[in-house]
Amino acid sequence: MSKKDERYGFIGSAIIHSLLLLLLVLFGLKTLPQEEEGILVNFGDTLVGEGLEEPKESQAEEKTQTVTPPPVSVPQPAVKAPSESTTATQDYDEAPIIKSEAQKKKEKEDKEKKEELKKEQVEKERIKQEELAKQRAEEQVRLQKEAEEKRKQDELSRQKAEVQSNVKNAFSGKGTGSSSSEGDTKGDGNQGYVTGDPNSKNRVGSGLGNSGNGFSLTGRSLNGSLPKPTYSIQEEGVVVIEIIVDKDGNVTSAVPILRGSTTQNKYLQDKAVEAAKKAKFNIDKNAAAYQKGTITYKFELN
Image (cartoon, rainbow, N blue to C red):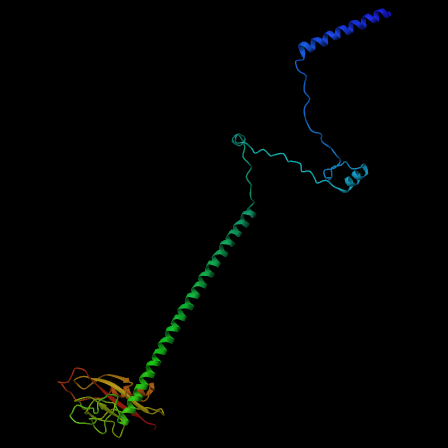
């Protein structure tokens, strides 16, 4: 090819390319694309660092060697829950767990042991509550007995002091009243028999006498002698028995009383009651159905 042809070819190609470029500018490219905006990011060589200037290569390598970046957590993929449609359309069931006879027997024994332990605990609690209730009841009874015993002791002390005061006043000639005399008749002085019982309010009847025994029953007399008690202990004192006598002269009741008594010995009281019940008085159809009186026994040392 000659140089003339090469020149024509070069000129033709330039013209064609110029026309194409002109066509693209006029009809193809309306606007030039704009570049995307953004910021520059320093990739660096570690996840930690401080300062505004880029460090030297040696310093960056030292820091890279000494600093260990924290582990990066990798997100786990979410487990997708089975959908209702999957569950609903499942055409098979899980195989049941088949337990052996030994396992069943062991479970049964464990259950029975638990029930037995529970019953034992309930029974122990019940027994404990019963014991507590019993202790409270016994304590209440004991307190009541102590209060009753104290009341009795106080009453006995009061009665004893009253008897001693009455006996002292009777033998000293001093009474407890404000009058200057005692009796059913007119005049001054203490009406009664010289040998009578100073603690009796009866103006007639038998006194203590030489034997120390006597009775007081208004308008009635003894049939025979007054029965004497028999006793075998070395004790002394006076026991006054309150008696009730019917119209036929029989003693229907005999009870020891504190007034006039100087001893509280139970043995002597029982012997006095036994003798008093044997006493016989005269028959009096005009007397009260049940007449009250006293029999006094004086016990002496043998």
